[in-house]
Image (cartoon, rainbow, N blue to C red; front, side, top):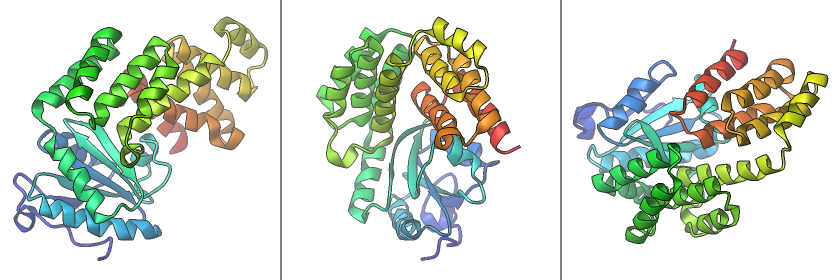
Length: 304
């Protein structure tokens, strides 16, 4: 089946309330994915015409979505024609599939999985109970508010009830990162089954752990500020300062330091500043104001 398969509408897919399979653009992403995922889960397939594995994966995704009888939708985005969204989401390789629910990404995978694994992925996605989703949201809100103990208790209880709930496992690992107990965070992430180790929640928690380790080695903020003032054009100093500022919870300061590198010398150290920004966005979360601001400022630099 071609990647240009005609879009099938609600009638052809048995999907209530809209098309089950469609293409989208940067302009329509909010409507087709974020808003639509409040009614039912939406899979986003990032692909390109030159990508061989994409041509293998997309027909399998389409088949699985049709078989769901409207329980999930599939939205396809050509990253060559629309690079902004995948760039902001940190897509490094394709095919990449993200699952959105309630307006946010909750899971995902990379590579051309076999049909059985895709069916299982969708089954897990639609099988999540409302109670579980509400508990995840409550625990995440507690963690964002700094109530780490409350968040850890909720995530821990969810793991006892649903040992393969990767959002709960990742959330508990993030709690340990917040506590500074990086060893226990690593041990928690190691509990993820091999088939789910690359899921979006686990990848985000691993990024938080990796970032915490880098930030611990960054150095003193005041000393780095003084060094940066003396050497404003030294990208390594700015990079180290960004890590230290993030560790001190000065997210906008960290953004300023990294964006200054992108503006002056984007290719420095194999595009390290942009890659570090993407990791910040992943760890901070898509709804964080610093993430929103950072993505807008980065896009204005990259796509001006």
